[in-house]
Image 1 (tube, rainbow, N blue to C red):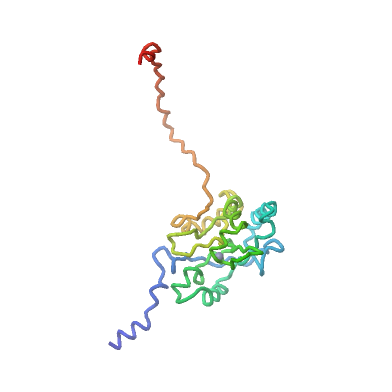
Image 2 (tube, rainbow, N blue to C red):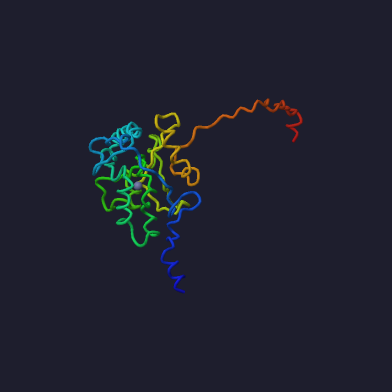
Length: 238
Ligand SMILES: [Zn+2]
């Protein structure tokens, strides 16, 4: 009995044991980006300090410029949370969400398992945000979020955790990861490599559609049968 109690006391929390695909509480593992890879987001975007991967900056600038051109959206899209180190994520995980580790993981990734550590993820907020606090699903009804959902993929961003995702992560219409509009975009191949498992198992929505691949098989086209014209006389009789 004593041995059983001891074993129970020392056994790791089964919820924190990674699944075969490396996920902990639904979230894939990610390492910290090298600090030299990070740059400041455009001035005035971050509500607090907002640093992102250098490769994300051109598309974020283009996205903000396009948003500025929409009278209902311009100037309202802000960066609530950008790069977060694993150390910072530990604090967010301890204090964020409600309940035990398993419940908190629905809205906050455990340290070492957040897309924010890669420098490719941004949590957007809207200012002003009438009647809707930050990081709540009601955001999706605000014009700026609707604009984001309609346009972010044009600038290489995709919604990592869509509504009803099978990954068991809360719908996060504020959380977007950058993977580039095409694989040829500078830095996109690296971002896509990092997110490959997540993108394959739990596709983003809206996501970045891969360009249509033309497959050449070397086979000749199927012969086209000549159209047999029906006899006009017979047709009239019917
Ligand atoms: Zn986020």
